[in-house]
Amino acid sequence: MRLTYITTGSFPTSKASSIQVMQMCAAFAEAGAMVKLVARPLESSNNVFDHYGVSRNFLFETPHWLNVPRAADVFQMRAAWRERGDWICYARGRDLVAPFVALLRGARACVEAHGRPLTAREKLMLTWIARHPRGRLIVISPPLQEIYRREFNLESFVAPDGVDLKRFEPRLSKEEAREKLGVGQIGNAPTIVYVGGLYEGRGLETLFKGVAALSAQLL
Image (cartoon, rainbow, N blue to C red; front, top):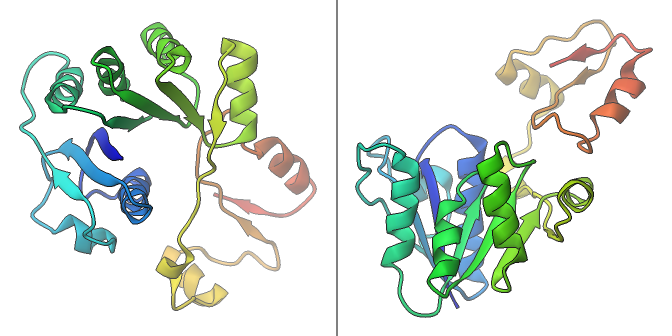
């Protein structure tokens, strides 16, 4: 199986999504796929494999980014058009042009959604991809799957986000972690940190109800 992950993100970067993309490419390769990651030109000269601590078991390409209108669309279109034969296009978020073009050219395509489509254009493209016989919509949680089913009448596959615990060895004590993050202790009150989207189903409703009567510090 030949899988090409096409993203308009650049690497390395401090965005958490870049870690996920690199780790997924390495995991796909470990599972037996011939993987290639196509991304924007590098932000720095750092070696991306060393930077993210992943195996060098997949190809990494950074084609030229053209300074033209709708540059992100053009980049995805060119990346998908260059692929030949039997392959799978994998994309995430708002990068919908690459899977759209891949399906038009006879390939298979998967889109990983982390939230609702933000524009009418995205909704139309995502609907077409999800309903295509060679297209697949992947969501990161059962509540998001229900949103797509209820609001857009689209079926999807659930593949929750994960974390590689080996990246957090050696483990820090609570005090060491607070010091590194600059988060102080307020008496005996718990400190709750939430990072992520604010759409329905992420558990925020439960969080707010649970801490309503507590002297908690929310970040």
